[in-house]
Length: 96
Image (cartoon, rainbow, N blue to C red; front, side, top):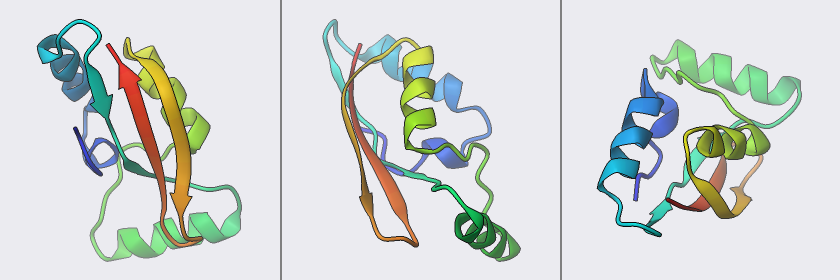
């Protein structure tokens, strides 16, 4: 499980490589993380949060997060976007 962390890591690919290394064959990863929506409102929200010192190194949409996980060698089993208009979270289950 890696919760709400991949988007704030300067190099999330390293974390995913380490997770993949330690997971048993057919092991599962649960990775809920904040994702970005479409439109001006989300861009403004991101800028406002950054003014308070929060830095997101990756700012994927729900589908971009799925593609990112798959491009790092995982098979996405299930994913869905949950949350409010202010804080969207992509809950993902992926298999090694």
